[in-house]
Length: 491
Image 1 (cartoon, one colour):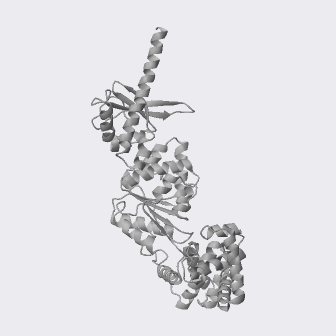
Image 2 (cartoon, one colour):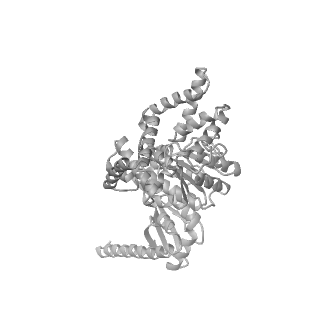
Image 3 (cartoon, helix red, strand yellow):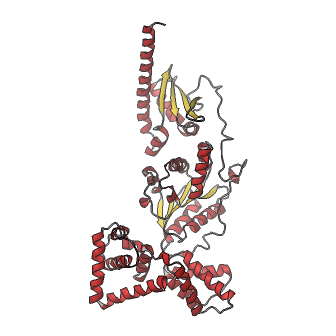
């Protein structure tokens, strides 16, 4: 072959490649106008135009899973767009990069098989999807409806005590259970400090869905398990199978989603799962120890999706709710306790539900083992030992909860920008005790209370000291609170 012919072929190839890219760029502009931004970013941006020859365009896609989604949901849009720019005889071929051992890779061409775009070679074998579903919960050979939910049947709405501290989250959970995936609460993002009932509530929602919709596939998974399953799927080169499994779920509950922080590859997989479920009106329920806005280290595109539905926090229960929790626990255990003992326990254990129930179990155990009648003295001895064992839990969180409860406020109010006198006063006292009783720096304390700087904390400490010298009522507040901290944490 002459050098001139070779040069002509190279130029012709370059022209065809350039023409392919220009046409696909125009197609992308039209597609972008007809789909949601998140759909465009997820399913169309990763597509790379490879070649255009005889009105047949070849597009490179990241995985066979992309092929399935494009063919199932978007092939008619792609078809109309290609026909508009290429002509009525346009044909579409996908090419998928297939990873092999080491750094080698190959590709497989898959023709479009739906819509009005037809292939010239329909005999190209298609990978079977029936054997591609990997169940991370090790239930081999079972179909969709037999996936085990991993729910704890003992966690229900009936034994989840409602109070002002959890009213929004509980009501939202009951509401979405009637029509999962079709309410405004998708996703439902439940957040709050440890041992306030996030896991109980998440299980209760799942159990309620299963009761009302027996055919729905519900799955509860701790984020830690989700992470380990993803790592296993990477090691076994089964990431697509892992994703495919989770896309079978009708109601997906992921506990402690904050554990995704810093896990970029796992976030990418969860992003794909989230998009698929949400677009197909499947329900997502997520729990976290912090609000979505405080999840530093999570991709912004994922964070924005966490905010699509409803974010509801769980707070430290007030004394009335704590009493109700104790009575419910005793009823379930089939035991009785005098009301004054219940009130005493509820008054002195104000950190979280786990501590509350633990102190009750301790009192019952001491009474049973030592054959003692339950009275105030027994309750005092158990609670004292219980709190001493948990001395490490005296933190800015517990100080804030105690101060807020004392002034009949909510802990989050002390972190707001409000200038109301009662809130400012409570915030200053909390800052004062945070510096006095913890090892936190002035900067850390300021950031905790709504992102304030260290000078604000210094001003708060000075103000509290000055008021203690000049205002006997204010001094009484501080002394009362100091006694509470001493009795609950230091005695």
